Length: 500
Image (cartoon, rainbow, N blue to C red):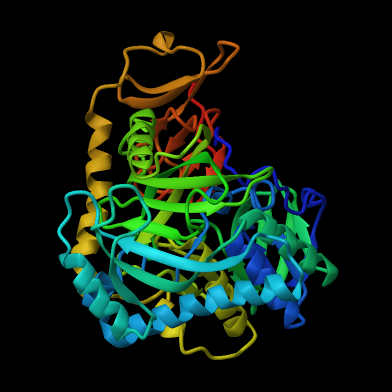
């Protein structure tokens, strides 16, 4: 994608090369974000030989686009989770996510990773023109799962002195790519091998083993862990229970000490979230995120960033200039917990997907869980995150999220966005109609027009142009394609079909 986050100046495993030919290992890990690299770390610590493979650079996916909150409570509120999963399962969710934060703290200490990790308070506060009822309801839900919480009035943001709020102690944050660079270094010492720029085309399970097929060679292993943002080994079972959402982040410069170091998020819908990141020479960064929408269902990033900036400056008038603007994609599940464990219908293929806005804690927790299962152990978290679960109380969410695919397919009978590709300016893309065909057309900086089928190669959904990130988004299941048709994000494996 076109933008660059605050984290991306840090390289992770820069020595990684494309797969040079056929290889063997105990476990092949597909995907090199925090879920994939943490899985490699946990498995190598248990003595397994591991290969990590990615379609792009190591740690170059959605983990590099996070805002890096380490908050173990449900991103959609514990009170909402309890309505679907009940008190006991919600308590297990909190305990598992809190264990992930503890694990990050333990690893960065043991491996001496300098990644700005720190424990701090988190504040959930009453949003603009929002009633305080949700604060009281959430207080009861958080207490029920055993998490420490304090109700108070006022947070250290402008105009929020009388806002009802909850304070959560022992939250955390860090620099995600500095952390992953340290994880990759520790893995390399344990003989983990990394191969970048090598897309996996298929994973086959046969004769008690798996084979990851790529255009550059085969990787034969006893097990595979697929830790891509959206799974590449499932067509329907998991994807019907997840939905992709685009989220936006803007960072500002700020004088050190001008804002208390904490995590902040409000009760608006969609909500805003704020955190600090240490900088240099007495200056820090403030990250402000929000303005989420379903992937592909809006193309108005500038307006969303304007609203984020207005909100941020109203709450923090001491902010200085904007330093970075970027977006990322989260994969929400219908019951707020990710899908981690044995892939439905498989014996030796495991998955980690469905971050529900908590990709960092889900990634680390999922690595511990999958490593335990792969090596024959048992976990009290397995049922909670089981990929084949059917959460009946989440049926309403299932219907709402899957209506996207029905609405999307109806777009094939709609007119094109423009009459002809000749109307495109350099750097722009749009959908055009030619007879019965819908075409994704893009004009590059040299004036050449790239024409591809507007049909996602995963399940055929109608693509939408994302002018901010210069890519084609699939609203149904989260596939992302570059302007020239190549795959940037799963679940799609194949590039868009060229149209002459």
